Length: 152
Image (cartoon, rainbow, N blue to C red; front, side):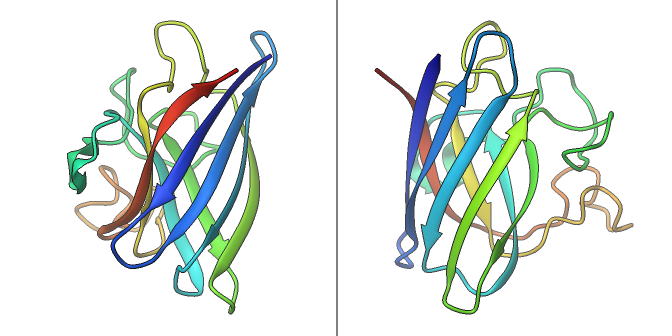
């Protein structure tokens, strides 16, 4: 079993941990707990680079090794890093589990060493009709992020 973790931080007081596990060639399970977000839906994506030297801005675009359009987690045409939305409760916390087959922890399209990013708004999953829908899901600014590192 492969395991990874991303420690989420932001200058706005958002914090948490995201754990990734993958058994063999199976899907990757993402389990997270984050606090300090505004209530509601927030876009959640794997971004290309594990670089936070300029905060979340230096994480690059959504991880997209197949050069597809932005979409939802259940869509055939989607970036590998398109994990949809995380629902934050009235207390500002989100606890979630996502199972996804497009984000392996090993191999040529591994997400290890990349980053996860929370956005300020809801991801329209590529269906919003906005000029950014097919690129970013029109989810707004990057408000918190963390680098995905392999664990023992």
